[in-house]
Length: 293
Ligand SMILES: Nc1ncnc2c1ncn2[C@@H]1O[C@H](COP(=O)(O)OP(=O)(O)O)[C@@H](O)[C@H]1O
Ligand SMILES: [Mg+2]
Image (cartoon, rainbow, N blue to C red; front, side):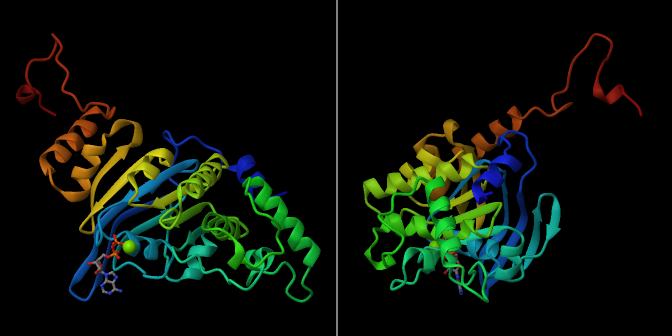
């Protein structure tokens, strides 16, 4: 059974209402006097793509490093499937099924695709199983509908989109539940960007929880279900993608129109179905003040 089939058989849940696979609350991280993150909340569910957007210096990269265990947070809690966990090291993150594709991809240019996929995780370290690794590589890449010429070419001869595909496929060998992609389309042309966005959709459709860092609004709108805005290290809006205009996003990102953003946040909070949130009037009750416990 392959990685993606496992996910499809297992935890396929729609984003609506399901418990988050990953829940961050009040995550803070300072570097000396600089508060890179000041109490950030983030939820991501299985089968959901959450885009984290924000201006330069908003804290996106720091958040990626917290999620990947590179920078343990100074404060806050992280839950994986409702259980509180510590991301004290990259090994912790991997063990908890949180995989990160960093912007530099960390591929070995001179090695071929299969070697890059299995780098450091060869199927049987005591006797490298070349055939097994190649079969697994093809299966994985076929599931991703990845367009690669052959597995035998060095990564240096691949396009930017193909490299991104190899880097993503490599993380899937670890059977993650959450995948974090840092600016996956930043260096890509139009066609390659479309290819990578398709790939992100397939990850979601196979039940992964996907976090995409980006500052390309077009890409974000094309692929995300929700958009989480960071500004100066804090949450500054959490929007359903179908429910937010570009103007509202830009306002949240730049802080140019805090009033509109906060009014919107209030509206959304007010629209949430919370029992008893609205005072009801009925002929049998008079006023709140007269009701005694
Ligand atoms: N290793 C570090 N040492 C000191 N300051 C840092 C470090 N990493 C990030 N910062 C600071 O934290 C803030 C957030 O940075 P970063 O997370 O890189 O934002 P983004 O990725 O959204 O541009 C910035 O002010 C940045 O200068
Ligand atoms: Mg950054």
